[in-house]
Length: 114
Image 1 (spheres, rainbow, N blue to C red):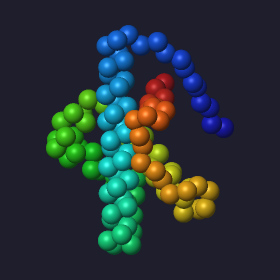
Image 2: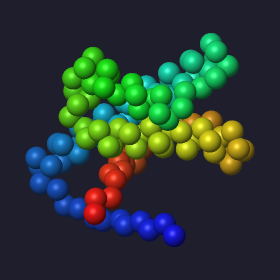
Image 3: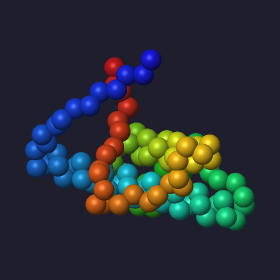
């Protein structure tokens, strides 16, 4: 059985800034990985797996220092979301994954800490 919790939060102005940075980093990483996967598929006929995308994170954090402002688990969840989107597309349950936009609903997922 899977369990999910939704919480309504009221962040302070400092926390709002940190959340906005996390939303932006996650959106940028998702779009970067989607573009990279699409280009790789066009060139080689094979896409990138979730683990291959996650392995790019340390080198990308060195190249793009602002990417380190977001928690690494949030960026890893973005890779998981992209992997799930491609799986749903190839199994005929959804359309091809779209790039994320700032105007749409912003969301990030943190792993459950027990």
